[in-house]
Length: 103
Image (cartoon, rainbow, N blue to C red; front, side):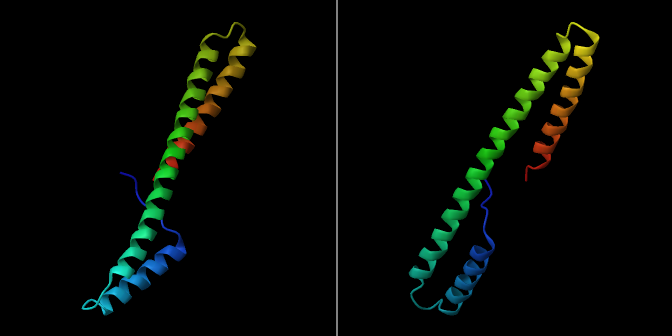
């Protein structure tokens, strides 16, 4: 299950609706509940999309690191090996950055 991602305005609108619903708790609050549900659905969809996008970026970074490691191992000359080593280090940095971006 992914974490819903609310925008600033959605948070404020949701808080106003919850307060309004609490004040009218003895009356009909189905309209307020429907609005809150729509906001929650949009936030859940946004959270799911961000999670999927992060997973794609993470897989891409892992693939790039694997390719850089293979290039380093299969280098034939010293210069080529040094260049491949630098590329591997850069790929490791990118992977760590993507991993840190996870919530």
